[in-house]
Image 1 (cartoon, rainbow, N blue to C red):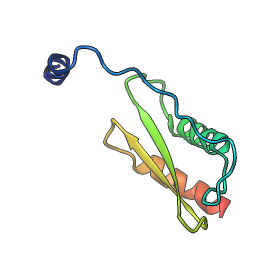
Image 2 (cartoon, one colour):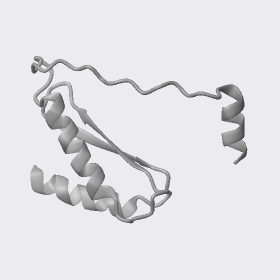
Image 3 (spheres, rainbow, N blue to C red):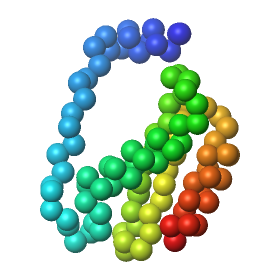
Length: 97
């Protein structure tokens, strides 16, 4: 609770969120469209939600390699134990190879 109070003292009104305006066209560096990439991330985030607990927050980032040969799934959460989810994602990745 102390952290929330300190943050409030620093900035009472957080900045409004902004839409990410991405080009609809595929660039030379991207193999997936922005919409397709977002759909993959949304699905992976859904799969990582292993509980109905609304205080547990899961976020996913899909990072594509510069040479377009692979991608990295980055997972963050406000819980400590991610071992089971990481293991399950590795199984999914092996199937998709």
